[in-house]
Image 1 (cartoon, rainbow over the protein chains, first blue to last red):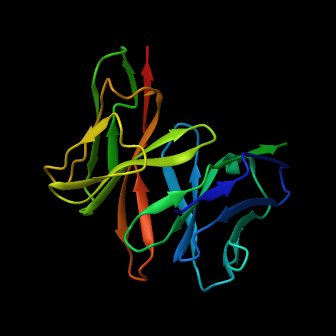
Image 2 (cartoon, rainbow over the protein chains, first blue to last red):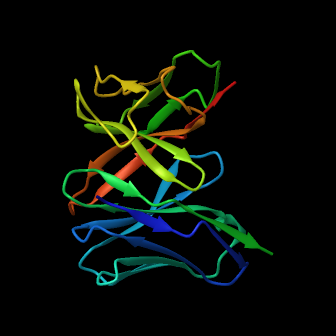
Length: 111
Length: 115
């Protein structure tokens, strides 16, 4: 079955870049997603990448996909205190609308 | 505005009681999902429904029940059989976009605490 893993914590200084990593096991993944969850809130879709792409850039966000290693990363440039949140990666595989989420990475941005 | 509404935001329940969490959407989406969130475990799928009057068990359905009598509503009942019900519950509706990508829209969540 599908399995998605992330490291639990990441701490960066304001202005630095953050890189959040995710690994997945299902090679039939079609789309991979990054969601952001702020304290006490639901999840917000940040960006996604199709499995035949290597990179996608959207303003301060860069998604890199290494399909051979089944590794996905989210880079946040010029990280701000407002970026402090939990970031979930998710994969869609096997058809249908079912998403499998990772464990979430808590990003803490320090001044 | 279109969206998903979960209520209540905080819920307290005594051990041995059933409790129902509400989820309503006005997005006209067919598919709705319930996830449970525990620290360090990500989101785990409880139940999902891809069409009215039909639903399937997810990965951790034991101790939960759902109904889908209307497209807009997908309530989740946490029964007394659920051994560890204290958690944050998220309802989602999921739609396939024009590029065949899937986007999930989430409610604000309900924090359930068993006392």
